[in-house]
Amino acid sequence: MSSTAASMTKEELAGQYVTIPMHVQLADISDADVVTNISPWFNGTVERLICIVSTPVTTADDLSTVTVEIDSTAVTGTATSMTSANMATLGVVKDNAATGQPANKTFTTNNTLSLVASSTTAFAEGSATFILVCRRQM
Image (cartoon, rainbow, N blue to C red; front, top):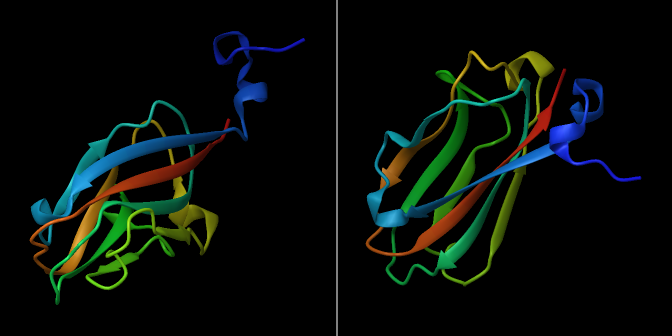
């Protein structure tokens, strides 16, 4: 017998993975929030941030680092370094698993999740899809 999420108990939902995809034009990235204040509808942990090149970068000397934050605290291990060189091929996948203490990657429905850029030298072109992978908790 199979169950749908709507008919599952809290206990059955705990431990399931939730993916939140976000498409970003790299030229729009500056040292600020890339995606701001996602309100999670569940308690959970940040497990990883995946970045997939959607439109390759063709100009040199572009870079930025994107990190997941819970409220305004960076989640250790999620920093995704993007450069002209590593974003130049369609479909390249950068996968960063969250590390550190569980308290650093745990959120509740009262928190917000954001992607924040730093150390940015502006991209002229290119796009990427970021996939935030979270795990439900009770």
